[in-house]
Length: 169
Image (cartoon, rainbow, N blue to C red):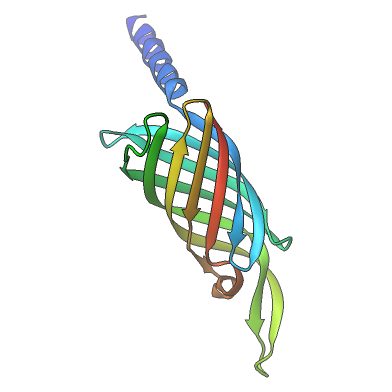
């Protein structure tokens, strides 16, 4: 009985801690290689490694009308300058993974390029600047190079420069 009560109290405590972490949801859009695209974006801050400002970011979106992708990033906040009296600034960077389906360019035996659609996986890195206003709005700009397999996908969509707007809660 005591053991069950202890387990219930521990699970309740973990649930409350997870709900208490800041979150943000919104859109991320910009230039993904040579194509424009947009994604639905979600952020969840973590309290790992004695740093309250690390966060996990997940997106689901389309690029250039010729593909879709899902990505997950773990970002470390490495600087929080005080550029203004209100709101919070943060510089962040981190690794991640990308998976999706899209059209890339291949070269045939005659040396001519042609389009080929295929699923892809990739490793990504991200570097960005984020500003969270004193009201529930967060804006960020980031650069995200991605190294994809198969490699022919890299010719068109290997990097992304994006602007995000999210509701922070």
